[in-house]
Structure formats: structure tokens, C-alpha cells
Image: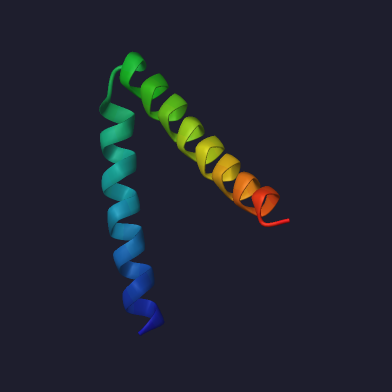
Length: 54
């Protein structure tokens, strides 16, 4: 079961890395910036939800 999940993860990871490596510099920067904004937004939502529970 775990091996199947690991194989599935590595399959998608390898596909993403192949696409990312072949992408233009602008697309690579956009992916990094968008990922950072999503992570910061999630952290802000978690922080604000904990702050408003008090």
C-alpha cells in the first residue's frame, strides 16, 4: 500500500519536474511566486482563525 502511494507520488513528481524544467523562466517564476502566495495565504487564514477564537 505504501509502495503504491510512493510510486504514484514519484510519478506525478517526475511529471511536474519535467514540465517545470522545460518551462520558460517567466513561467517558472510565476509558479514559485504563486506557490508562495498560496502558502502565505493559508498561514494568514490559520493565524487569523486562531486569533479570532480568543
